[in-house]
Length: 610
Ligand SMILES: *Cc1c(COP(=O)(O)O)cnc(C)c1O
Image (cartoon, rainbow, N blue to C red; front, top):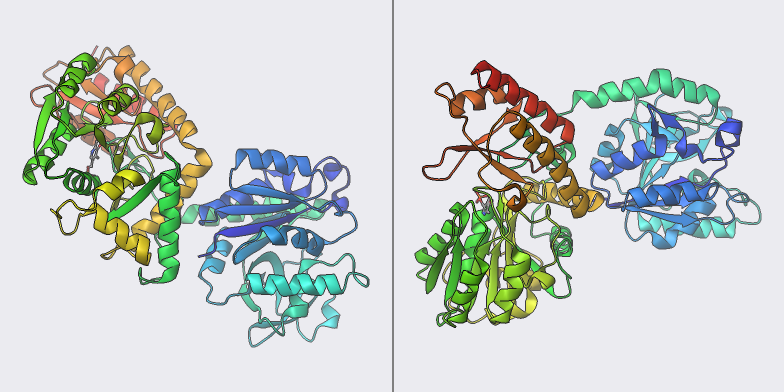
């Protein structure tokens, strides 16, 4: 799996004259977006985690871009005016730590090219196209599909079998050889272009030419190219890409949540045995990243299981409480009730602290329970999905710690959507899942554990063979394999979802969710509907709304009405109180929530609701 990319962006772009005097070529805009940004977004969409941009001319603009995209690292080539693109690649080289994609900065291209390179079986591959007649072509001569020679001068080649696009996949080994060649040739060719270094070492490191005859791409070197890009190439690219967008369904149910197309497509990858080292390393990296969203990976560890969120709850609850321990479980909704049910199934020593599902927990009463000294553990749900009630873990966690309780928290509908710091909250074990606020596919769940506490559960008798936290942890730590077959493709999707969460950041995701929630709440009030939980106690993630009190209202009718318009809503889940629920978790944009409120209004009008 290729996870790094390098964009060579130091050049002056002097053929575009005044346009690029005060900015690099990559910042030329098409449809209001800088061409390098088109490229960055496509790279991120195919699982690229780190994008190194080699800068020179007007480097500060790329530094600005790096602030917007945490995956970007800029590397400055101070000698950019005296070197060619190879000089910039040499400056970037020490920062490249694995096989990578190499791109020029002044390109627009169909994203399918990246997909082709990711799937190409050769280690070193140059993407090529048929004739573009663009006027600045680098021609490629091949022998049995591999690079033989390249030149801008067609006549110097025995045959022109393709044109260099400016996107290649390279290994660290060929990069090293290219850098050595460039250093050796410095006096004779100080302004070397990177493709000449590739050609020079290609007899030792075979480079495959992957030609897409009618590939839509354009390098933008002059005014003519820019015009062609605008009028001809970009429309083709956009049309091609639109052909494989997935029909949009906005899930307003509380999980699984709406995902991006890039997360959906991440599942389509080469088959692999999950016991391969490569896959183990990927999982280890993902565990690290999952931890890092909420805690220090030095102190906490993520343990992955195949299964839905309840499997993580079950692994956590059944593995953490010793025979002589006693867990107090807060039940203020279906998920708290579920934790208690799990405790009962495993015949743990437990007690339930009941609290109203639509009201804040009475902390004094809870503390009084702690004070009895009867408990060793506290089990609680972070965000009660049943009602959208957010339990104040920032108060309850530290309070539990004051009474030396081990804390076992179901944060399935809070993790990666609400900024949190497990150490500060005093959380020892926390369950979450791949298909809610992290915005991945269903099928992977995980428990984030304080290592110190994890070590302490070692001798607790195994109550579940499959869902044993300590066994899963130690087996993976030792072998970089899960004990049983993990859902490989779901993990690939989760990898992409992690990448996208890192780019957005949990803080900004929470802001986006909150923005959607505000749009909903303001509409709900305008339509004279009432909410179950007080606004200030709501999570901003899920809203339980009382059914309109009219004979004409039917949840199923509202559901079907919305579903026909691509919105999926969810019934309430609270005994005798009739509500419906709107969750605004997942890849949902404020405009979409706005549209939903309009759909809701249409339905309410149809039942003559005020
Ligand atoms: C979604 C959810 C779960 C897990 O439910 P699954 O159906 O197993 O995915 C557990 N706890 C809470 C609070 C949830 O919101």
